[in-house]
Image (cartoon, rainbow, N blue to C red; front, side):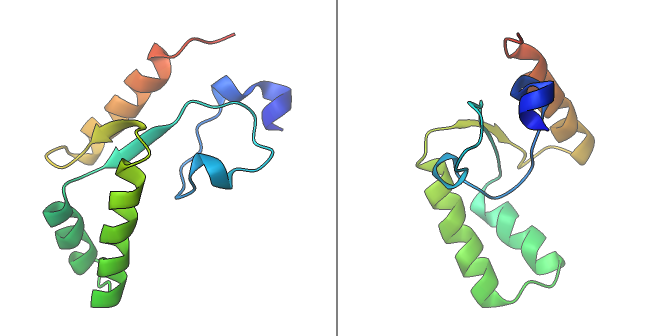
Length: 95
């Protein structure tokens, strides 16, 4: 389906890295990030157990090391994050 409509029109939200997306068409990646203290607060608020929080913090560090374009939502509302995602997608070249 992605190949049929064109990857530049598809936005996929997930926790995969580019290396994990085997056979995925060429893509532009954007990392949705926040500061560790905010990530921990949000996860605690959702009832995540301490070991899950530790894993999430490790994963976040690993994702940052990938050097992807990032949107930092630490001090943003969900609406502001959504608008940032839309702005990012609109700024990318489309074929």
